[in-house]
Image 1 (cartoon, helix red, strand yellow):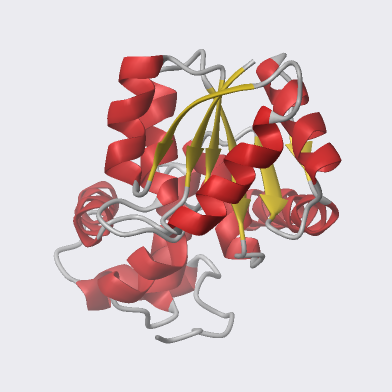
Image 2 (cartoon, one colour):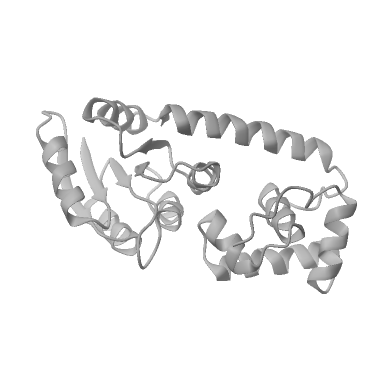
Length: 219
C-alpha cells in the first residue's frame, strides 16, 4: 500500500513515516507540509491512501481533501488530526474523507484505517463515529423541519442557518474549514435561489423556515 503523509510538523511526519515504514505492506511514498503541496504530491505519486492533517498553512486539509476527491477519486483520504469537534468531522466527511482518526491513535489502529479505506470502506475512530452519527441525525431533522426551502441544497441550508445565527462569512469559513471565497459564493447562490438581495432578507427567510435558532458560536 502506497501512503502519502501530510502534516505541517516535520518531526511528527518523520516519526509517523518511520512507524508506518516498519510495516511490511506499507510504502511511504512521500510527505507534504501543507494542503497545496499534498495535492501536488498526490497527483505526481498516485498514492493509495493520503494521511491528512486538517489544520495546515497555505491550504487546509479539508480543501485539499476536496481537491483530491475531484482530481484523484481512486485515492482514499484518511484524516489524522488533533481536531475532534463535530464541525471538523463534518467538514472532512463532506469533503470526501473516508476515515477520521485523532493523533492519539496507535499504529495498529492507523493501519486498520488505511487498509479499510484503501479497500473502498470507511474507518472512524470512536469520537469521530459519535460526531458522524450526530451529524446524520441533525441533517435528517433539518431536512424534515425545513420543507419550505426545497430549492436549497443541504450545504446551502447549513450556510443559511449559520448566517441566520449571526456568523460572519469569515466565521462560517473557519467553522466549516473552507475559504472565505467559498462561503461568499454559497451566500450569493442562496440569495439568488431565495430571491433576496441582502443578508437581512435572507435571515428573515431563514427564520421563517425555523433556521438560526441555535447558539451562534460567534468567532
